[in-house]
Image (cartoon, rainbow, N blue to C red; front, side, top):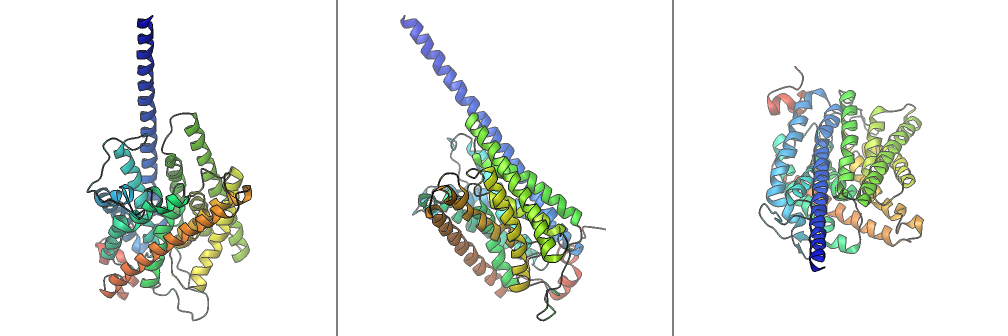
Amino acid sequence: MEDTTTIASEVFEMSAALFDEISFSINNLWVLIAAILVMFMQPGFAMVESGFTRKKNTANILMKNLMDFSIGALVYWIIGYSIMYGESLWGVIGKFDLAFFNSDGIGDYADKTDILFQTVFAATAATIVSGAMAERTKFQAYLIFSFFITLIIYPISGHWLWGGGWLDELGFMDFAGSTIVHSVGAWVGLAGAIIIGPRLGKYTNGERKPTAIPGHNMAMGALGVFILWFGWFGFNGGSQLAAAGKDNLVAIAHIALTTNLSAAAGAVTAMLTSSIRHKRPSLSLSLNGALAGLVAITAGADVVSPAGAVAIGILAGIILVLGVELLDQKLKIDDPVGAITVHGICGAFGTLMVGVFALDGGLLYGGGLSQLGIQAIGVVAVFGWAFVTGLILFSILKASNNLRVSKRIEEEGLDVYEHGENAFN
């Protein structure tokens, strides 16, 4: 009898160990695949930015996106990751640990998988700035602020939520980073666009509407948007951080569905809104409408219903068109690709909507104003941090004459003067 019990116990232990190993493998594989999908968003950003701007600056933009990811990957590995995920100090910053790794693994997947996944998120935050300041920024300046965003600006505010900091303790919800990733990049970009000023020829008509500076290749821009849409399934779905078991698979399917519905709704309503506002459907605004829907749903993709995702996308598409007009015509802030509206305004909006549409605790589901108030605190805090640090950084670069290219270079194009080559020969 004892032998039978012993054998049964050993079989049970072996089965449990095998189950744990299989679960770990599945989770690890899913997060790795998701990281690769998010990395593929980098060429998406490169295509959108270069397509929405002029041909003479294409090589410069492609070079910035390449260095964005390359420098960011190194800096985030060496320093940024530990600041974001190290032991929390006062709920504000992680304890620094050079090239930090938790050798025992993190949760249900390997530590090296986690740092790769978090690296591609950091690169996303940094590359958003590029679009807001395109066509007039010195390449060396871009390398400097890309370095500092990945080194300290993004990791510190990221620690507040995802590293177990004060926003996490407060109950702030931002599932995959509408605010923590997208708005951080946008608010730094807003500071840069203000400090560097508009492109030459953008505002030359007094009180009349600004001069339109069309992009040179909308096919390239459209391809970039579809690449981003594709990669977003990894961005949001991967943030589940596990795929083993029925519950995780159901959650990933739900996240993918809400992500897709919000993007589609954003594209449709941006198209309709641009038709009403400008008497014809705008391709560029419709493309950005899809991105607006994607950014907006990123905060609550796991906690809102499919119908809630559609509502968020509908509103994001409308806000996108109105936000572009506000910045471009009223505030005279020149953002060549609409990055500030897409990632900043719509990111903040989507984060707030978690407090309205969340199935558990949202205003429309009997949760009252509590969660909405917490969401507002997080949005304002991250805006203050990213915008103020951006202002300081860009003011220093401007004062040292290291921010904006000369008039001649801007007129003739950054490609030849900054890089000695053209994208199209």
